[in-house]
Image (cartoon, rainbow, N blue to C red; front, side, top):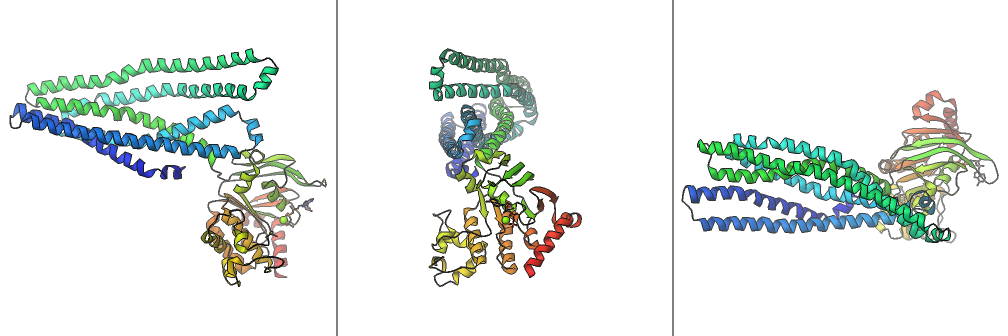
Length: 552
Ligand SMILES: Nc1ncnc2c1ncn2[C@@H]1O[C@H](COP(=O)(O)OP(=O)(O)OP(=O)(O)O)[C@@H](O)[C@H]1O
Ligand SMILES: [Mg+2]
């Protein structure tokens, strides 16, 4: 999301700077006018036409910078919107049919559209409103410098204006929300009728469908009329309160002029500044509301775009084709970014869990969810892009090491490949091979040891950079010394991603903040390494066994 805005930062920053410049010019005008009037009519020290020329020049500058800044702003706004749109639609094409079976596509499209719109509005207009508010502060300073008492009197209505603005939006918000929902309903009916036109016709349901659309359309009309009513009731308040402020300024200011405490041109400057203050006060409330709405929308767009990596295993049951039940009511929940170790006796079903995560097999009961999406609802391509698995006996192709590492991302540069190899502690042995990264592996090529193959497999998965990483005994053939080097590199990488490590060695388990002890296809215990060590006899038993095997 941020990259989207960042890629348009030049026109965006230009727009903000120009709008600030424009507003500064605008703020200068009232003060200049007041001075001019004083100099020409009160003190008779300056010629009217030179003053007027200056005011016109500053006014024109304010206008031109205002126009250009607005052009840049809308240019950025609509380009950001277009980018978000294509990102989202790209994402939607990744989702599988079963997802579309469950979600009404009309709702989906309309929701995506309005979410994009509100985020776009906020990210673009919030900075602008802030600039406006800054200008308001400057204008108020000018007012204070002219006459502080009058400035305070003029401000009396502003808090009222602010609260009326908030109140109005509070009344309007539910209605605008209802309007969005009803528009989505109309979109759904239209969508269903276009896509299901054959069914509608073959069951002679045209009349019923037309009625359905009419109902939905009436619903939209009702919402719009309500919206207009509320606006009609509230806008006169918002529009006329500032006039009340002006009247107060004229009354008190006039009185001050009569008593010689104020020059009459200053009343003019004052009134103009007061008008400038109106917008910031009205917008402040709007900013808060827009912010709330944009936050909700951004959350939904993030949901749609980014895999954060929460994994829920909801009461899984799983049986291989031969009929033996391997997982029985396996229930575990992993938070985004967490590193969890799966520990269990051999044959307890650990690797089976890894295979289910990438849908090499499908569960026979319960479901696996990533960020709340059933993994059967996403396409295999996107699932495997997001879940990287390194198996204990990795398969390598009879091609060069470089191509093996880049297998999932053929476009990767050699630098990226080397970086991944370094993180997997593979770089050091690769560069010592006769042909380095171009060494061909396999039957007629160079034979790698089990540990070297595992390191290449780890590099291959790291290059893909998946948000969810599963290491299934991925370092079992690597000696403890090299393994600790790999884990040192992994520790840095693991902080940003959800990781499941399946391991026997304490050194590997120590990577995880939580251990799930698996026995007979279910989670027997769930806690920190120390917890389990102290309280679960089976756990220390398994670790002792692993240590014995390792040392023998
Ligand atoms: N393709 C398969 N078809 C039938 N049964 C299988 C299949 N793969 C594994 N199993 C059985 O499922 C059970 C769990 O296997 P799994 O590979 O998940 O164990 P594990 O916990 O990873 O063990 P290890 O620690 O030895 O790797 C075992 O009893 C195994 O025999
Ligand atoms: Mg296994």
